[in-house]
Image (cartoon, rainbow, N blue to C red; front, side, top):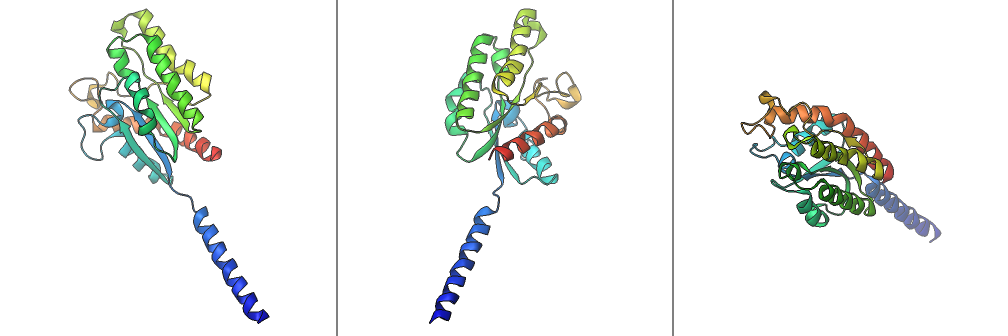
Amino acid sequence: MAFKHSLAAAFMLFLALCGAISSARAEPLQIVGFGDSLMAGFSLGPGEGFTDKLQAALRAKGHDVTVANAGVSGDTSSGGLSRLDWSVPEGTKLVILELGANDMLRGISTAITQKNLDDMLAKLKQRKIAVLLAGMRAAPNLGADYQNSFDAIFPKLAEKYGVPLYPFFLDGVAGETAFQLDDGLHPNARGVDRMVERILPTVEKAIATAQGAS
């Protein structure tokens, strides 16, 4: 009888260990690319957008991740703030926050843009979600005062919240016609490749931070 009890106990222990091992297996780290048409993949084909190519590049380097596309073409920082809660699902570990370009193109007050981005960062911090802030730069034809005020938003907020900053999301693409669509604003597929290549080291560091915090 004692032997049977011992055998049963050993079997239950084995099942418990199997369950613990199974639950300990890491799920893919969930990343959300939250932004406007630059994130959404405006006028690009399947698999050609930023989030798809970033996911492929990260997986090629051995990162077990999923990168969800939460980009909405034409979105302003106000629109982003209004949809943040339901666009970033539970379980998200890292958000790449890319908004502000449409605010700039519409000449929206930089105080409004900064307040909206500040509120988004505060909400994500409250949810304990790591953030990589992707900066934008103002067009020079808007005047030096607006340009200086707008460009300063992103480093200020990155410092305030202690989040990593990628200074210019369109680095290597802006002003380079070979990497842009005919509208001169959005990246083509080659442009997205360049964007991913340049931001990849910063994303990898942000992933390491997100994994350390979880």
